[in-house]
Image (tube, rainbow, N blue to C red; front, top):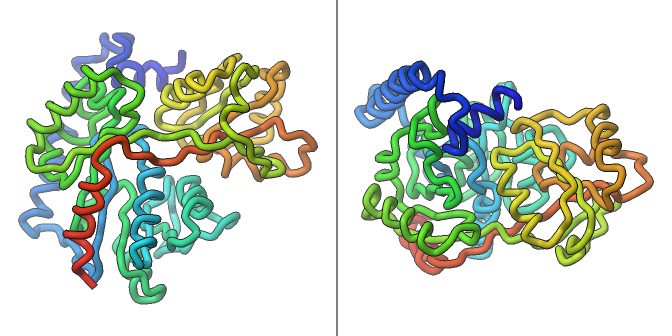
Length: 360
């Protein structure tokens, strides 16, 4: 096991493999926590500037590193706002983004995997990458006439004031081992959840009722004023990466499938595929945001030569698809995921209308 996988298992509370480094990691966590708290206080006291834009701003974020399902939630939110007559813009930093200013991301053009995936899922929204997100927000408003801004992964981004903070909590691993980076997966203390207007428990279908109730009680103690909701990432289809052929997820049942992913929570992806009745031959896990190469394609084809399909996530698909040009077979496929509320959808919709709908 690589050190990154060992650290991830330790930080998520799944292994004690890094316990020998625990004292050093916890010491470093104290410093990380103090810096985060000082930064937050600087914004609250006006020592660092926080920009107020002239349209409503909704942040979708979390307390932890790794995947909690922000992209499906952002897609749902953008569609919800569009259906209500709004012109939303999704503004995100973009992983490893080194552009100056901002760029509007178009399907098939340059951009990070999240931005390109959002282009495919929500063509009704403007997708903007900007290292300094206030620049992207301002350009969306002044040059593209967007009338509501969605901040992707924005809970810790305090340089833009927001009207609503929607915070996602993974029901299968809400706080990891309970420690702050680098000793755990928390970006800031759990008490920071008190800033949230709504807390949405994602992957709620993957835990039992007692576990879900326990996490819900913790959230209420941390953020008693926050509206709570539960949601699932609903597998909606399987799509070929080479010819875009789309079949229902029942196609996976009983088939031999190889998995590959470069996402924050690969175990959640594997659990979903197993739940659909596939016979999983193995799972090649790459680090989050990994840049795939032709060599990786060859490795995957050799490793899963007996599989009927090599299945990835939709986020992986936007990076793998350009590498498969000329591939005659449709062996590489992506599992498409949709956002579905299990509870609290009406309350979340009403909150959006009350806090954002009145601003024009």
